[in-house]
Structures are given as C-alpha cells and as structure tokens.
Amino acid sequence: MNKTLSIGLAGFSFIIEEHAYIKLNDYLSALQRSMEPDETQEIMQDIETRIVEIFKDRLGKREVVTDQDVEVVIALIGTPEQIDEQEQEYTSKEKINPSALSSRRQLFRDPETKKIGGVSGGLASYLGVDIVWIRLLFVALFFLRGFGLLAYIILWIVVPIAKTTSELLKMKGKPLNFDNLKGQSSKTSQTVQYSSGNTNKITSKQLEKAAKIVLKLIASVLGLCTTVLAVFFFLGSLAVLSGGFSFGSGAVDIPKNINFYFTDRMIGSSIIFVGFLSLFIPAIILTLVSLKLFSLNLKIKHTNYLIGMLVVSWIILLLFVSYSISKTNFRFNGYNQEIENISLNTKSDSIILDSKKVLIPENFEAYILDIYSDRKTIFKKDYPHIEIEKTRIKNPYLIIEKSANGYNKPLQMNVPVEVSQNRIIFPNYFSYSYGNRFRGYRVKYKLVVPDHVKITKFPGAHLSIEDEDNDFDEDDKSLNNLLNEDDIVESIILKDKEKNENIHQP
Image 1: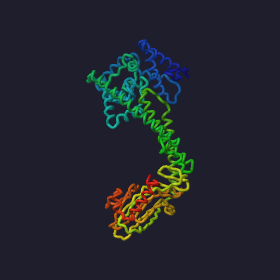
Image 2: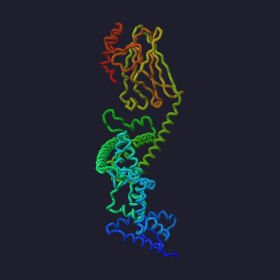
Image 3: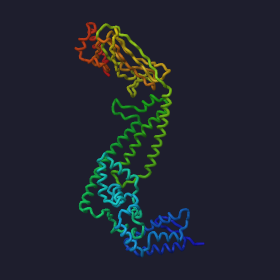
Image 4: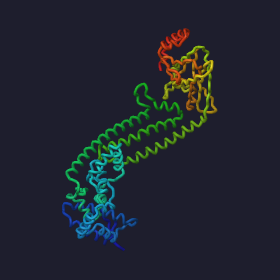
C-alpha cells in the first residue's frame, strides 16, 4: 500500500504516489536551480505544461501517477546535466540535414511572426523556407482570381494557432526537452530564424515590409467589400421577413404574394423563412469574415454552433416547402390544349395587327408576375407574339392555341381577341379562375394568310411578329398607303378613340 498526495501542475490536479512526488519535486527543483532568476517563472510554467501532457497521455484510465511515470517525464524532458549533450546532438543533425526534421513538424499558425493571422509564418516554419516567400506567394495567388485570399481564409479557420511553448517547438520540429523549452521561452531567443543564410538580409526585410503593406491593404479592401455585402444580405433578409421595404410603387409585398398562391399559412410562413435564412446565413458569415479582417485578434465563440443550427433549420424548411409544392403540382399532371380558329372576312390585301389594353376592375389587387386578382378571377399579363404563315389559301384565318397543365381539366381561359374587317386586336391580359393559379396558362397566335397579303403592325401596338417576308413599318403614312378609303376612315376614328381612352398605355 502506497501513500498518495494531491498536487497541482499548470492548473491541473493529479494524485501521485509519495515516492513519485519526492522524485518529481527534486527534479523540478534541480531544473529551477539551473536557470537564471529572471526566466525561472516563465520556463517552469512551460515545463509543467509539458509534464501535464505526458501524465495525461500515460494515465489513460488510471488515476494515480506512479514512480515510473515520473521516470518517463525525466527521460523525455531531460536533466540539467544532459543540456549540453542534447544541444550538441540536435545542432549536428540540423547541420547535416536540416530538412530531415520537417517530418516531425506540425502545422500551426505562428503568433510570433503573424501580421494578419500567422498563416504565412506557420507554413514557412513547417516547410523550412523564408516567410517572405510565403507572403509573396499569397499576394501572387490573390491576383490570380482571388485564390490566395480563399486559401488564406481556409487555413486561418482550419489551422490552430500555437499557444504554448510546446506547440511552438512542435511547429519547428524541435524535441520537447528541457533545453528547447528553455530556449524557446528565453527573451533573448524569441526571434525566429527561417532563412537558410543565402538570402540577403536587407532585401528580405524590404520584401517583408512590402508584402506586409500589400496584405494590409488587401485585407482592408476585402473587409470593406464583405461589409457592404453583409449589409446588403441583412437588408434583404429583413425585407423578406417584413414583407419588403418600400422603395417606391414597385415594391414587392412578399408575404402577400406568397399567401396569394399558398393559402395554407404554415406553407406560406415556411417559404418566407426559407427566403429569410437564404439571405441571413450568408449575412452572418460575411459579417464574421469582415470582423476578422478588420480586427485580427478578435475571437468570437460559438459561432459555428449558431451557423450550424441555422443551416439545419434552413434544410428542414426547404425540404418541407419542396414537398408541399410538389404535392400541389401533382394535382395538375399532364397537358391540356384548346385550339380556336377565327376567320377574317375581308377582301383587303393587307391585314393590320394591333393591341389593346384590357380593363381590369378596380377591386382587383396587383401581385407579382404581372397578375391582378380578387381571389376569384386572375388577369395575367401577356406579350402577344404572332407567327405569320403564308400559303395558297383564299381567306385568312387566325389560330389561337390555349394550353395549361392538367390533362383532364377544362381550361376555363378567356382570351379576348377582337377582329374588325382586316384588323386583329390582341389583348395585353387574359383571364382564368383563381383555383387554377398553378396550371401555368399559355397562349400562342398563328396567322395564316394568302401569299399576296401584306401584314402591317399598327403604330404603338405592343406585340411582336415573326415573319421573315415582311418589313414592318409603324409610320402612319406608310400604313395609310396600305389601307383602302374605308379603312383610312376607320383607322382615324379608332386612333382618336385610343387617344381619348389612352388604351395604348402599358
């Protein structure tokens, strides 16, 4: 049965056998006596931290530190009498093959040489090259489509910074013995030498200074850009959540438009929150990047958990919305089509194509996608496109092709086309039932005329014509030359009426 004691090392508590405690205490006292008074406290703190690491690795499920554990500590760190021997052995190996030590190095961000995040210093130490060349490499990669910035930010986030003396020694590939712990902690040896000795010192300092200025400038510019983007995304997310900011008469009321299609409040609210999170998550990420660029030493905790929870919420809502929309669209499987032929009873050698403004009742509200509705009927904006086909026929006729989703459901679609002698007037809106709002209504026009008939677009008509054989002239004089006397009189009357009623306004 062995007597045990409770001790504290570097802020950690351990239970140790009495004999092991005596040996450990004598060992630490011997180390302390071999140091200069002004460096004792700092070096001993680093040595205790290293001892804690060794004890934790060896204990496993055990709770008591034994004499054997202390012997391992002494063997790994070394006794004061072994300082000269260790130093000579390490120096000789480094002179023979300096790169052989890199296999024992670990990648950390270097706090001693950092200008922004310590990434360049850590890579330089790990690779065994001058830090100046690493910084110049990042600058060169930055101008290569921003790859340098992306790589730097990723390494900044992923690679940990060396916080303890032991981590600094691991970064440089040096053994964690007493001599190296003492040397690293000493104020006279804090300057890190990465150069192989062939680089001109003045040139190296000049290059390092230039790289530092460029990197700071790039960080400032990028910080400003990411800040602007973050503000933009934040405003966008708030606009989606609140229903859209009022930037004029054309502002979009998002909740109203979503609720117009999805009467189920749960689905509508889910769509709004999906849009909100789609903008809010990038806004948070851009804000964190901006803070990191402007305040290099700023530390913000638990941001990963926040972003992770928001992303998971966004995915869940997105899956629910996708399922709900798919379920709604399944009601209108297939494709339905109706074709209407309208004969033109005219002997004129020309046909005039015109457009008209469909009058919409005042109680109809405006929605996105150029839609007006009273929740019973929908008026949808149309931009008439007329395909012209010339063939050997006597009488011209117009084909109106109406179509929508839903194979076994009637179209119930109203397209108010008007025909007056040799003039066809196409509407700028067509209508259908509110219950069919997901069917995707479409309308196509095809005009079949004899070969000798001239097709003319009325001045100011809002429509497009597909006919390679005609050059359309909207000039009034050219139009009048194509009309007979009766048509001229009718055209003048119609134009006066259009001016009075302002029917050509979009």
